[in-house]
Every structure is written in C-alpha cells, then in structure tokens.
Length: 212
Ligand code: B1M
Image 1 (cartoon, rainbow, N blue to C red):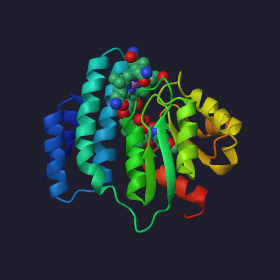
Image 2 (cartoon, rainbow, N blue to C red; image 1 turned 60 degrees about the vertical axis):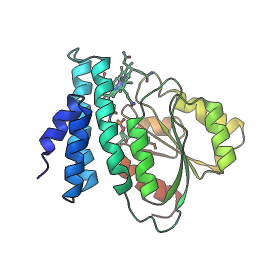
Image 3 (tube, protein in one colour; image 1 turned 30 degrees about the vertical axis):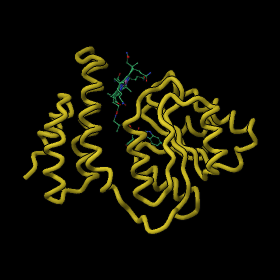
Image 4 (cartoon, protein in one colour; image 1 turned 120 degrees about the horizontal axis):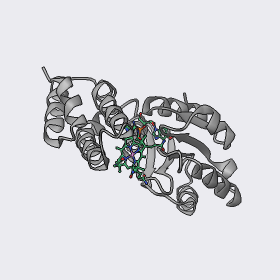
C-alpha cells in the first residue's frame, strides 16, 4: 500500500523524487486522485505555509515544497477526469499581476479541463490587458482569476474594470478564487462567481453557464 503519510512528508520536506514515487504507487493501486491531492498534498502545502508565517520555514523551502507538489501533480493531471464527453464551455484562467503562485490555479485549470471545459491557461503575473486580449481573442465564456496574496487580490477589480472598458463585461462571466478571496470580496468587486477549491470551481462554472 502506498504510504500517504510519506507523500505528506515528501511535499512538506520538498522532496521531489519520493513525492513522485509514492504518487505513482498510489495511482497504480487505484487511489482516488482527488483524495491524494486533498488528503495529503494540500495539507502539506498548508503546513509549510503555516511554518513560513511563523518564521519556521523560508522561501527556499516553499519553493521546494511547490516543486515536489507540482511533480506529483503532473502524474495526477490526466486522471482528473469528470464527464468530458462534450465541450462544456471555454475558460481563460490566469494568476493576476504581481502574483507568482500557480499551483492552485493550475489545479483548477486541470479540473475544469478534466470536466470538459476548453481551458486557455495564460499563466502568472498577468496584467489586465493580457486578460482582456485573451478573452477577446478566444471568445471565452468564463474568465477565472487567481490570487494568493492580499496585496494582489485587489488587482482582480482592475481586470473587471478593464473588461468593462473594452465592452466585454456582459459577454463573459468572471470567477475569482485563491486563499485570501471570499464570497463577500467576490461580490464587492462585481465578480459573478467565487470558489474556494478546484472541485467547487467546476460546479460554479457549470452553474454560471447553465449546464450544471
Ligand atoms: Co507564497 N505566500 N509567497 N509562495 N505561498 C502564501 C500565499 C502565504 C499565505 C504564506 C504564509 O505567509 N502563510 C503568504 C501570503 C500572505 C498574504 O498575502 N496574506 C505568501 C507570501 C507572503 C509569499 C511571498 C511574498 C514571500 C516572500 O517572498 N517574502 C512571495 C510572493 C511572490 C509573488 O507572488 N509575488 C511568495 C512566494 C511563494 C513561492 C514562489 C515560494 C511559492 C509559490 C510557488 C508556485 O506557486 N509555483 C509559494 C507558496 C508555495 C506558498 C504557499 C505555502 C502554498 C500555496 C499553494 O500552492 N497552496 C502559501 C501558503 C498557503 O496557501 N497555505 C503561500 C496549495 C494550492 C493547491 O492551494 O493556491 O490556495 P491554493 O489554491 C486552491 C484554492 O485557493 C482555490 O483552489 C485551489 C485548489 O483547491 N483557487 C481557486 C486558487 N485559485 C483559484 C482560482 C479560481 C478558483 C479557485 O478561479 C475561479
């Protein structure tokens, strides 16, 4: 049996090879990918974040944990499948300007993709003009924005204003998410939807398009 405690420790300790090895074992044994992510990997990232906040871990450790989680996540991505029988809608997703965090955003992108959405992932540190151009060029149904910092979450409003200025706001639904975001904030900046994890992001996206 794959040792899920070992996976937690590997991500927490920033050890890529053991993280990948245990994940491979768990997949071979038929473990639920969501259980692997939510049960071991995300708690490990939360713990390293807590240690960082308490001054017990530093940026290099955060980077190593992120590398371990990303490595393991690569194996799980193709398995994050839902009902992907038909294209449900088109989504542009990115992390807002000034923010380099991409693990959660990529997880949301993979889940949406696995559940039948066409996803255009435009990366991290994305300025408003790039969000607007991506929505315009792709004709996306939904724009998803991610922010992990209290200093960058305010930029989501800037992007919404840029959509309005470009005459696109009524053509695209806007969803926001990331650790510091909550429903109240989403409403305050005029977003159409909010979700606090990758699973509920898919449900919310379907709800917004009326395909739930
Ligand atoms: Co940073 N970091 N970090 N960091 N980092 C946090 C966010 C922090 C909370 C740590 C802490 O102090 N406890 C803190 C923010 C404090 C604050 O603003 N309140 C912080 C800080 C301060 C910083 C720096 C400023 C540190 C420094 O340099 N002094 C710096 C900023 C750099 C920048 O962005 N400009 C920084 C840098 C980094 C690294 C680069 C080292 C690395 C990121 C690597 C990477 O992403 N490639 C990193 C990491 C790893 C973290 C923590 C530890 C983990 C983040 C993560 O990947 N979580 C984080 C602490 C924490 O979150 N507990 C922290 C796992 C991921 C699956 O969860 O991203 O929350 P999450 O995504 C979830 C949901 O939020 C939601 O679904 C996802 C899946 O369930 N979601 C969405 C996310 N996006 C969504 C979009 C949607 C919907 C749902 O669209 C609709």
